[in-house]
Image (cartoon, rainbow, N blue to C red; front, side, top):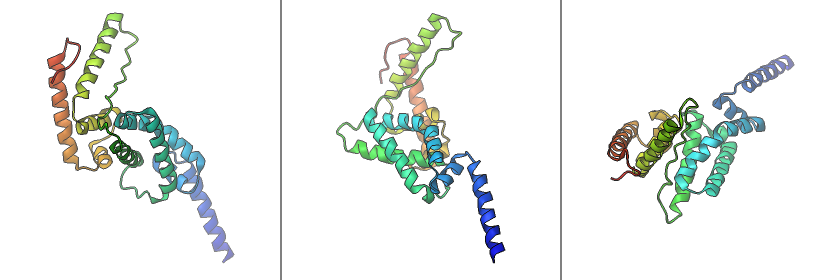
Length: 206
């Protein structure tokens, strides 16, 4: 009896030691479910910046976005043991954030998404003229994206600026994959049309 108990304890210790070496999101979440604060700090550091940018584009207010991100990770801490693994951890976290952001946005009169911000870094090999052209093109592209519907901007944001797959985006926003593909198709088509129509001018016009 004592030997069986000792073997069980040893197996448990070995399993936890292996888990402690697993720094994947899934491994971190399993440790968080066991109350591991260091795992929580690691997961927060890995996703908080991208999550903040995503939420900010939805609510348009930095203070509110910070509050929502804090709430999201508090929920992750409390609900880590409920994660069923039907999606990636990042997808699960973004879905929580999206729900909270849309709930907060519905409480405001202004329902419009803040303009999507595209971070553009000029190549160090560029000459001043080329760098200025890149900056001008980025501003023009921002203006075109701002004219998309909220649903289309959201898909563009998740796919291109958060590197999510169609499957992940579908899980985050709660629609079929076919719907995501359709929104991507029309969003890219509209961006292309607006960009070509407006290229060389200071703004896009629908």
